Image 1 (cartoon, rainbow, N blue to C red):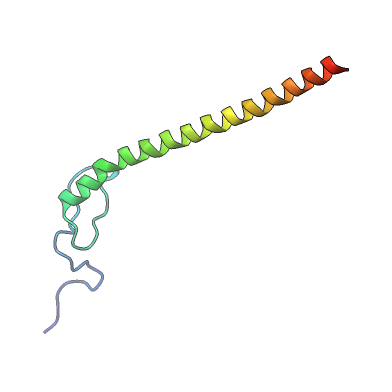
Image 2 (cartoon, one colour):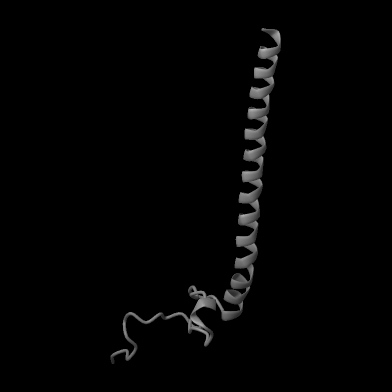
Length: 84
C-alpha cells in the first residue's frame, strides 16, 4: 500500500501556515505550535530594538572616546604653545 502524501511534505503535525499576512508569519519548526511561533514573533521587535539601542550606546561611547582624544590633543598643543 502506497502513502498518498508527497514525499517532500512535512510530516510534523501543527506545521500548517497561519492565515496571516506573509510579513507577519514566521516559518514553523517541527513540533512547534502557532502560539509558540506567535510568541517568538512578538519577541522579535523587542530583540531588534535592544540591538539598536546597544549599537547606539556603543556609538555614543566611541564618540566620547574620540572627543576625549581630540580634547587631550588640543590641550597638549595649547600647553606646547604656552611653553614656547
